[in-house]
Length: 336
Ligand code: 5GP
Ligand code: MN
Image 1 (cartoon, protein in one colour):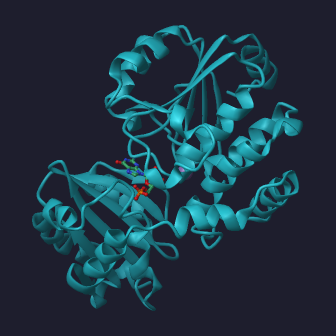
Image 2 (image 1 turned 90 degrees about the vertical axis):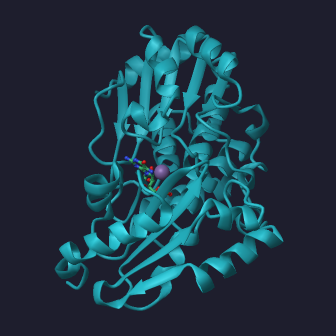
């Protein structure tokens, strides 16, 4: 349902808004949260951005980052915020379960007006106002459309634009992925006109590695990289012990899954990482191979055609074995 007049009135009458993102927040979820935060601050006295678990440090240059509360470390505050909220904005996810534990606190408030802005497939019908477009490069791009829909273009500040650009650039792999459209570039052109400095943002996001992170990348590609030429597939797998060896910080494996796709003829890349005993999977593909289907079928996951995530209920090496057993089922599709 999309009633622009209603959503405009709810925003203008709101006193307490919260913005929620999915587990393991990324550039697009944090970027869209902070972009919407800056926009809503024009109308609402109290706006709180909440993430289920801490946001990665590589985003810490964004204006508003320090005011983000995360449920994992501040459950009491987050519960209070959600109880008081009259407006709840759910960004960059298509179903409340993507918030993990935070979903419970969200469901307790049945009175707030709920907005959902997202670009994942098959959205659940859980919001009063839903702006869901699977063809959009990023949720940040949809935040732009949302602001325009509310006639709020003049509220796009540099701080807002920097957050928005961050989500666009990270979710499009720096404008490489096929989700990048003319509209994506038009939005960015407008942000540059407002005064954002793309070079500075790239510098903050991509040229901000620790030495350990770069060494982890080297180790992963040298020691934990399996190629399956028959299936045009590759796996990178990192145990908790591997990560600890490189003093792992949240965000250090960001982008790692894309490296195998830079090899000609590799159509699918899978990253397996273990943190706090949990095994997380990232899937990427080129062309028509739908990683979200594979991930949904075998790893309780989902996402987009070419970028998906999931979880594995067995250890890292067992997950590698499980995948090796799954590849033959997809041999024809991967070689199409
Ligand atoms: P990433 O590999 O960067 O964690 O996630 C890639 C894409 O898949 C993102 O769009 C993300 O929202 C989605 N995704 C990641 N993990 C999960 C998951 O556990 N379940 C579902 N349904 N989607 C996921
Ligand atoms: Mn996204």
